[in-house]
Image (cartoon, rainbow, N blue to C red; front, side):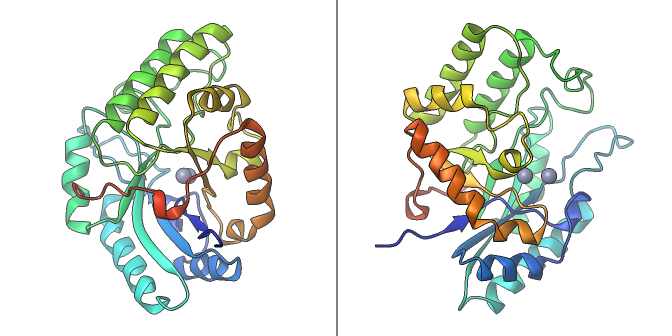
Length: 265
Ligand SMILES: [Zn+2]
Ligand SMILES: [Zn+2]
């Protein structure tokens, strides 16, 4: 039987660094033969100091309209594609409860965790460390925070687990990432192989990481991380990513195997 083709990592223009109409993403996905399309735009974050605004994600006042737009498209295109409503979010211990309270009335289908920073972002300089100068303490903090977030039981998968910069000793990286991979595996949480990072030759997907994940036996999900509708047309890149994972000996999840973990949403 043919596998269901799916992508659960799609942004919208509401995050200020993606482009195109929601409908264009849906139509591109259909044209590409994607059968399940999940919208997971950057979730608003709720910082206690109101003068801090992170411009690279959706403002809270746009969330309702986002949800309505995705739900309307879900109905309209029901015969052609299955559409899911979600968010990609950071896990910030200090503000996560507020975030959950905010998203609950939206009745999301899922959330994915994408940890771009550590601590609570707004009150720390730690996250804005010069690239490449992030040492062991930073890596350790990242892993600890990601585990704590995953333990909330609300995340479908962990997006780009390997986006953390670390140029220190291999054994330090290995120790931390083995521990992260084992933690995710025990909870049956897949790890995302990020296509945007792959296409743009970012520091992730990181070969070091995926070799570790292979040895631990994690399962992967390939995420387009689409910030443009046309990114969804890159089935060729998807196939390349699949080939890379095959080479590492990592199994990808079929859509039917994915646990959305939306009971608490
Ligand atoms: Zn983004
Ligand atoms: Zn993303």
